[in-house]
Image 1 (cartoon, helix red, strand yellow):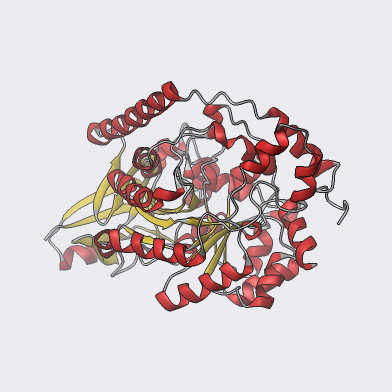
Image 2: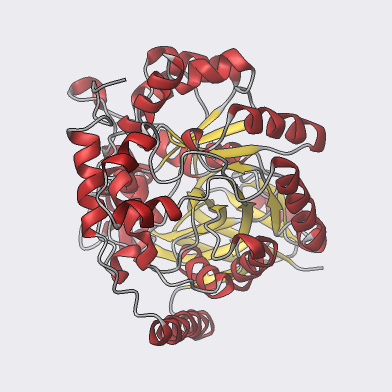
Length: 497
């Protein structure tokens, strides 16, 4: 039996800040939280006392893509989403094990213990294989993953007025663009068979608590109502959940208004899709009625603040979400502000990049910590981790070096939660622990060597892929037509309908 006690100065249990409380860990599970003296009376376990530590539940990255490398390094520069998507054919098809091992290492080193993985396939014909490799890549880094294999059946490349857009293109761009559209790669029944196969092939990993599978209609504009309702029934029958991108940009909201005369949330409530079984990433373009419906339904939200900034999408209505007690988490989306997958910095961006302004815009730093831990875990609706430190829960936690946070000087007795949100970065993480086992330790050659191996492996894979296909595609012409369509043509907001 493996048993130990960790005694930090500060402890965040997922809901509140505690001082001078210790954690007894037994066989990977929290066996007690109490004063150090009280725990020592019931256990002879070795004690690690650290007055420089702030211990929190391991963070949940509630929406990401496991790309491994930023699109920027392949020349796909940040642009508004509808333009940026056209440039992603520059990216090499990095093996998913390599990408997720490397990404997982970076996440582990900044305190993330669980990631919601929105899958971008290299090959639709090989998604099951890719999902297995994805799970194993994250496992190699030591973190848990929720796998979301995507489904689409409509509106590839252009959301609305697509025929008009295609007709406006000159040849040979018109034919090339039209030939690149494949709306429905598989039927919904084939998708469910795929999900069954993935769950079967990963049954051992699921049973051991490393991974699980959720349904993933890629986005509201890309997935028909019929498919969404079929997913709801499948999810309810099989005890699963649904995760999708929604209302990331104003053009996506425009699609809903042109299609139904109302926003997605109102439409989803009308057709019976909205409920506690679904979570929405980005969620920028929601009005008060949308948020009221979200709150009443028990649906959940994820903010992706750096991504929303970089792709010119807008700002999450953080204050309004918190006022309604909507469960919301934070996701890196593979677009962290500095392309470094630094979750601590992303918490700060989430804290600052909310749509409110002025005095009423202030967000309590404790609310951000909840989103990163207990609420983030609730968003994922996962049995993998609760995002809380409590008796009976898995010993998944992160140890923050408060000396690093405070350096070079801070007044004594400042709120450690506020300091962490204001100043925390990856280098402040001293240790990340999952199931009672260390998966990252700053300065430990074992982990630093493994992370270098993961980095070398992904870079070697990319160089091999680039030798066969340099990816030097000039997408500027089609991107210029896309810009023209959404700003001056039939696709513009307030344009012809």
